[in-house]
Image (tube, rainbow, N blue to C red; front, top):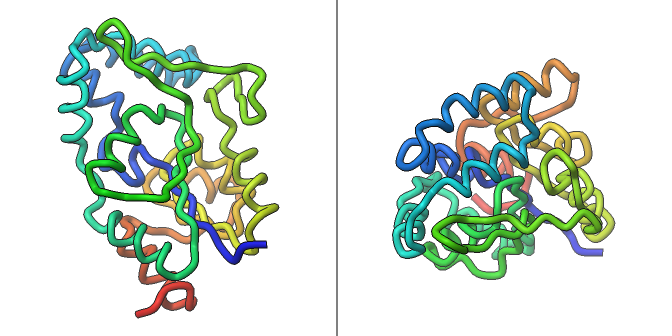
Length: 217
């Protein structure tokens, strides 16, 4: 069994802005109303994202340029390398799509980072998601069941850390050994009486792991 793994959500946790907001603000203003319908429970997460990502209407070069402009937590690249340097494996676990995540990883030269997410691809000026209902991690609501991924990783690692920021992350938070929660996830976990470490950035996470001896000071 391996020693430890650090698993992070992408949108709103690694990135400072969800990719769907980039699309809505630049190409799909109607998405703001759709967003409220989703938050009111009238749409499944995967249906909301599918509609937004299929409403871009741009050549792939433009879409990639937009992706590369997504702001991320400045500490993330160094943090990923620190985890790997200290014998940990770094994973990204996202209910979005791996299409834009891989472009960000390439931009920051982050290697050996495995991504668990909904498979995405470019076609006809939009981003599409390939959802396999027979996949072991399939979720009808999110496309990918994050808690199943964490459960799988816990079979391979002595310690699994998880970081997230929103409702989809409340499910894997119940399975991970330690959860770092920011933004809305803090309130959700507090209401559900799930233990978590409150953070606002990866700098906070790094400080905590240094104090616990997982990373050197």
